Amino acid sequence: MKILHLNAGNESGGGMHHILSLLNELNREEFYLGVFEEGEMYERAHDLDIQTVLFQQNSRFDLSILSKIIRFIRKKGIDIIHTHGARANCYGALIRSFADIKWIVTVHSDPRDDFMGRGWLGKLYTTLNLRALKKADHHLAISERFKQILLNFNIDEEKITTILNGIDFNKKLAEPFSREELGMNENDFIIMMVARLEAVKGHKVALKAVRNLIENHHTNMKILLIGDGSEKEALKKYSEEQGISGHVEFMGHRNDVERIYPIADVAILTSYSESFPLVLLEAARAGIPIMTTDVGGVDQLIPDESYGWIIPIEDSDKLTKNLESAVREKAKGALTFMGEKIKTYSKRHFSVEQFANNVYNVYLKL
Image 1 (spheres, rainbow, N blue to C red):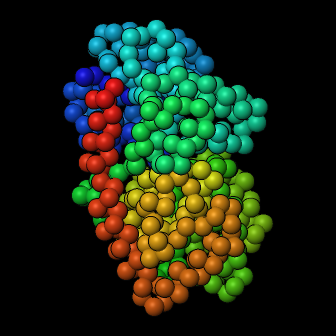
Image 2: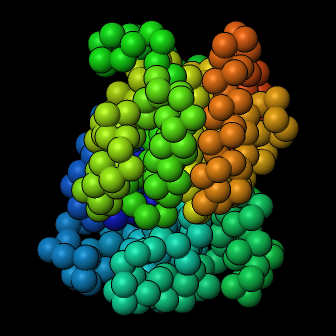
């Protein structure tokens, strides 16, 4: 069996880590990764000795890439293509028309939200992606909610398998930073959010909650925003307007997030749409309590309030109350126990081995 994974290659967040951790776990001889541009994903795949092919595009509308991929499929005897992301999905639909292969798609996010805030061009990309998705032979949904979304698109239930993400809990992690190294004080209450600076991630909800906390005399608050994106300047301006710029650290894209997690008191995610966020699993692996909006499969990671907090989407007041609760738990010395509890639970249920085996079984069925 030969499988070719396809992605634009411009991923640097959860999608990239999902693909690389899956391929890193599977038999190198059976799998290839094809990307359309050089970048962090291409470099990391090479470092992991994953068989990686660059199908170079001059632009995202350069369709000459299709003939290159089809020639590769025929030369290597590829049985299945597995696409990730809107661009790869659209190409997958075209490739499927010209090559005798099976096509599987992983739905990493709600397709209706992928291009949120991008005007008419975003609406066009969304339409093309939705049309392409319906043509796939099989779909992997990374949460039951995403399965329901696909069912609402009139995709046959027999063509959908729900497989939750997993990470390597046995990975040897680098030495963590100290708070002093990152310019933080020991008495700071540190909130950490790892997410692209895009509208769909809901950063303003988090910043409103920080403003509320400071107004409620929790002046030792710090929020670390890790990630880059098109909303960066707008969010900086918003922080200034809210009078909290001194409490917000824009740390940009980092390759050493694992070294930063241990200094945080809580990890938050305020997204409008997610599947099963790897960043929350990474926080859990570090033993950091989690606070997240009610998206994707987070209810399976946080089964009740003893493991963490789930809040409604766009509810900065509820986020404020839960952060105040976390501050009290820290003062009692109980926050650490919550972190250890979510770490133990996650390790038992969301290992990378389980994740890879579940995906491989779908390939065998196809």
